Length: 374
Image (spheres, rainbow, N blue to C red):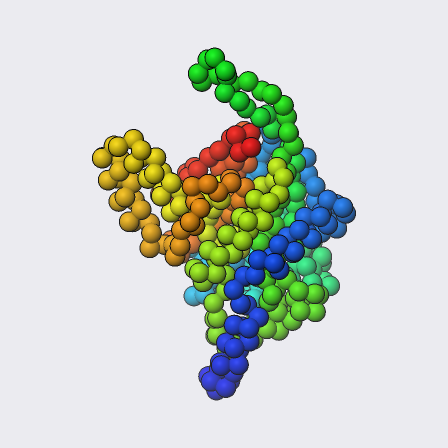
């Protein structure tokens, strides 16, 4: 029966998916991000929270896109679970605040009962943060259930054994020291003022025509459309798996962030880590330009070899990668096929792109001082 229905419905479903999940549109995304950003400021506690923190002592870990499933062949989180549990144990002990940035549960392909049954260990690890008031859960397009199901509050209490509200975004605010080079002594620095830095975090599906509409459209996608696709085993491309779409989506996110005043944007959704507005490949190309200026043949050879090794993972390089403002960050995901996970740390006055792997544990891939980002 499934095979027959798939033959009959394959073309109509692919047509509808193409129509409603078309390439990201800049105008729609800009409006959706601006609307959410303003809403959180105007009505804190409704769609999101505003959280002030001390730049030097505040500690946040941001993970997204676990896509917890039911441990079958389609479960992208299965290989990454050990690294995820190791990371959460580390951040709990180091007194980090955990922001879970959406698509934590894969509720397009699975029902919640299946996910709860197979992910008890991860829910227990997350619950420890909540018990110490160090947990914030954001919904994404694959776990829209938390936003639109009338009994979501009851399911959350059942999982975490405490009341938990799931938001669409959060705004962190801190004062950072603006640094200037000393006029006469190379290497010295002096603090001139303390501007306020705003860090806006949301999953990043805002503006997506298939999952960011009104209540009915989101309910239809999460509870009818996605389960139908899963039952028929039809997997049309989405921003998370279509390289061209996710690259474009990231660039539009960057363009929005670059227009804001003293604001950084952190999202997930595309599964593609971005640090200070650059993908890993763009950072390698930027480093190559500096190496060429130094005329170091050995360093140039190493830089080109690294680019050759990595360029197959990317479809494009922004033409303005040398001059992009460092305003956009993407946490990557917790479901890479090799079991590695990536995330964003904010701690010690710095922001970091980190990776956890079975071989090396925690690695800092990129790091920047928050004050210097100005």
